[in-house]
Amino acid sequence: MSWRWRSPLAGVFGKHAEWCAVADSDIVEDTGSDTAMTLGFCDLSPLPRLGAKGDTEKRVPNINHSAVMKTGSLCCRLSADEFLLLAAPDGTAPELSEVLPKPRLLLPRRDSHCCLGLCGWRAPEMLSLLCAVAPPEKDELLQTRVAEIGALVIRDARTDVPAFNLLVDSGYAMHLWDAIRHAATARNGSVIGWRQWRELFS
Image (cartoon, rainbow, N blue to C red):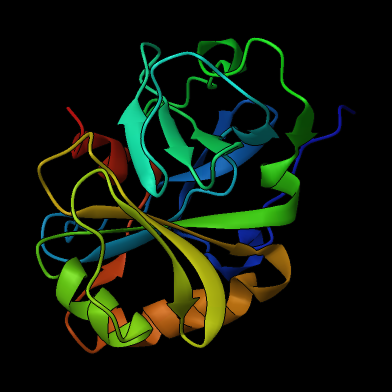
């Protein structure tokens, strides 16, 4: 039996969730919800992502901004020499060589951090309440606190519908999930699957 990477949030989904394989893991593909355009949230932790430090001469985003790469992945610049790369919406893994041909240090961000997706036209309003500051604009990111824990909030520039990637230390995955679930449910939002998330980018 081959080893499969498991999200720290894998146990929160009910028996009606539909799963599919992605990379070396499994992700909730469908929940039957249709709230992605208004207010939805999902677990994107199984999607490939990586971090790295190093110097580069390539065209990359400014600090606290992101840029879409040729593969469809999202390159986020956290400091002068630190980068985070998120998978393309279809799960295609990012290619570090697009940003850092010779990285000085690799950071396994999928193992250290969970990633939640929050989307819909009501998402910015809800997010501003959870982090007490204005949410980032398109292609911006915030290194802030969400539900009283340190988090990275990335506004996804690959879709016109407001969509955010929220990353926190994996040990706080359930805390963040519960905070988002309570806030979203109170605003008629619901859990969505990866399929509903992908459709925002098509």
